[in-house]
Length: 192
Image 1 (tube, rainbow, N blue to C red):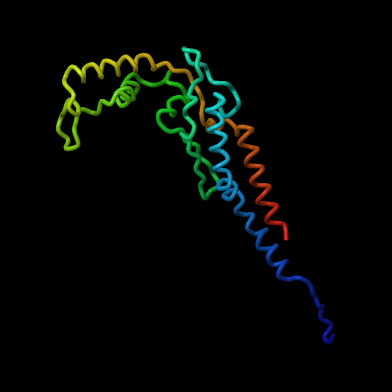
Image 2: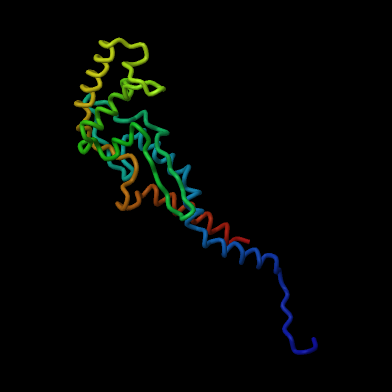
């Protein structure tokens, strides 16, 4: 070899691919969040089935003794963001159970109860005041009374936490999912 240069030989395509994959690890938080969504939703559904919060603590039983919120599977949505953050949202009516209704005002409880009873805001689609779709005044009054009774009875529902508390730490089942997904992504990045 003339000029005293160094000759390097090898599988440059594999080396460049390895360099590219390792460079993609800067996206690890986003990729872990995205890869965890379905598994976290499954964990939330399992929480409804077992009657436990995300930290494994059992929910307060119903006064009737039956299982609490067992029909709520599928009501939690887990969303990932490009920043690598994850948000878990419990949808209506389960959102009230996440913190309990002790703090719920009677006005809010009555609004929820009226919606459950099918009583609108007193206006039709055109904005005109109405008593309800074909309902007589006594029927509307009966529904309103039932809604008020429901609201009064539910204002003090105990906390049955569905999604983790912001800043309270990651539940161990969630932590396991994050670790499993991150490890899978990392192994794929460094394998040739």
